[in-house]
Amino acid sequence: QVQLVESGGGLVQPGGSLRLSCAASGSIFSIYTMGWYRQAPGKQRELVVVITSGGSTNYADSVKGRFTISRDNAKNTVYLQMNSLKPEDTAVYYCYADLVVLTKARLGLWGQGTQVTVSS
Image 1: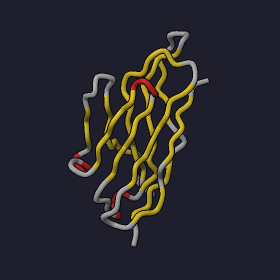
Image 2 (image 1 turned 90 degrees about the vertical axis):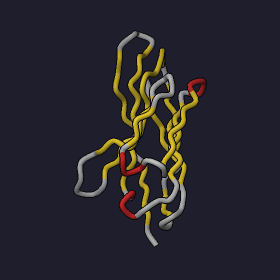
Image 3 (image 1 turned 60 degrees about the vertical axis):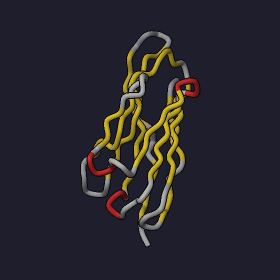
């Protein structure tokens, strides 16, 4: 059983900061890409940022300069530091991982989602 567990969402005022965490656990052999997507009400899920096992990143233009992704490979954990938050950042944020389990099967996993609300 492999799962992604997210934490760190909540309510914050415009201009504020939040830090999301996502830990992968279970029978994991290796993890390739990890990252974050988000889905606002009435909209499609969209990429926020992803990071490879080597540290290469790909940010959505809308979050460049405000959000920072980091990854602890030893802990199978990815973090998203979100600064200068705007109301349009309000969404459910989903963690994603492209990984290989001990049986050598390759999986794409999603977390359960964590709500981020930016409002005064």
